[in-house]
Length: 131
Image (cartoon, rainbow, N blue to C red; front, side, top):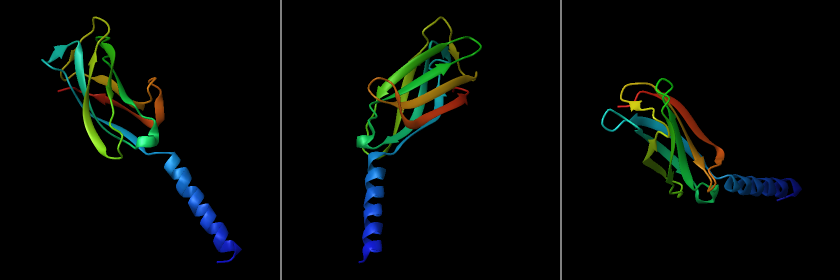
C-alpha cells in the first residue's frame, strides 16, 4: 500500500471518527389530542431517535392556539439508544386560554440538552388539528 493508499486509509478513519462524534438525532410530531375535547391541556405525540453520545436529555414541546391564546410547554425525558421511540408530551396552557378538539394549534418539538437547548437540528414544527 503506497503513500496514496495510506493517505486514503487515514482519510477514511478520520471520516468515521467525525461521523461518530456527530450522533444522529431526529424528531417528528405525529399528532395532537385534547383530552375531553376542550381544556387547558393538549397531548402532542412525537417519534424521535438519538444516539447515546448526542447529548440529548429531553424532548421539549410547545403548543399554541392563536385564537384562544392558549400557550404552554411540556417536557419528557428521552431514551437515547440509537433506536426509534414514540412518546406523548402533555402541555398545559400557562394562561386562561383553552385548546379545542378540531381547532388549529401550532406545535414545535425539539430534542434538547439538560438545559433545554436544541441539540443539532432536531426540531419539528407543525400546524395540527387535535383529535
